[in-house]
Length: 458
Ligand code: FES
Ligand SMILES: [Fe+2]
Image (cartoon, rainbow, N blue to C red; front, side):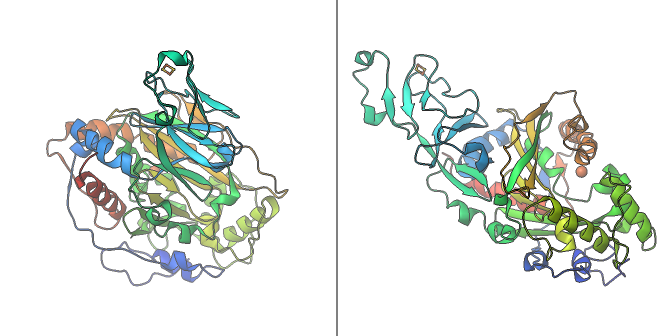
């Protein structure tokens, strides 16, 4: 066990996240040493941020059209004519790979009478073709043909280009932004590219993609994954192996925040001598569904033992050299959020990716997606990305066998999310109170959201 150290004011009992890094068996990268915890005040939130139509409508007009949003993985748009439909609060875009290899995003709305140009993702399109009357556009966005062209003398071909959004890529992800005046993606992402430079999500492939409609506001769902404070009440079974209350929370600029939560270390809620190293080891292996596996016995801590186990396993299975990778990078929840709705996990463990979007224009329903990126296999081939596995309303996340550990944990979170929505509607104070530190990321998110909502609408 790591000995207790001085407790910073306003923090939990027990070692800080940085104390775990101090005894990591390998050199720790600087990005994990960074700390950025400004005081964002103690303001309450109005419940109507999650329940009110007027607030939702402001998000639709002032926030969503101005932010960089993750659309898909680049490997889903590998070849010319590959297209992905991206829907967000009634806006719909077709992101397509052109013949010259560029990525373009076109408004998914026919310039004739408005039919969506594409109903679903497509592969190898030669052009964009409206199924209603047959208007056609090239992959570069220019008009190709109109059936009975003589009947539209008022239309000039050059005025019939498909409207575009901006497209950019980072980490193997494709993003779009509807606002021609928005900063470039690289600027918008702030510290993120530097933090993930070592973790190279571009060298991964999408091995898991599960989605489900959840009956709650999109922010209620997202905020269930922005702090470890809820572990003690919602996921008590993992307390022996998760340093929950002593997680580190950081915010960077307007758009990026993170929590760093140590695994293979017991919760401070269990006290300094509550769990032995042997129990931590055994429970982590059980969590990973690897109960028979032998961890290296000469390691100084459970984290060092399990870190070594993972380094060896990754080196056996994936391309890349893991010899200098830290225990933290192969064990911990290094959970980043990019405003407004994209959450990539850092490190080298198979990287979890979350995304939350309103379901259409419903205040009280959203789509939550869970993806897992895996490192490219040793043979260097890039496996094809998996299609989305949609769960039905009655299906638990644990029904997705591709989420062996995570599914059951998310099901516990599911026990809260719809109940938060109905509880917020029933609130008699109309107020939501946030912790000063452990809910810092929520404060940061709402501060940035307010900045977008305060700017003049489109
Ligand atoms: S609506 Fe598209 S061709 Fe008529
Ligand atoms: Fe949770």
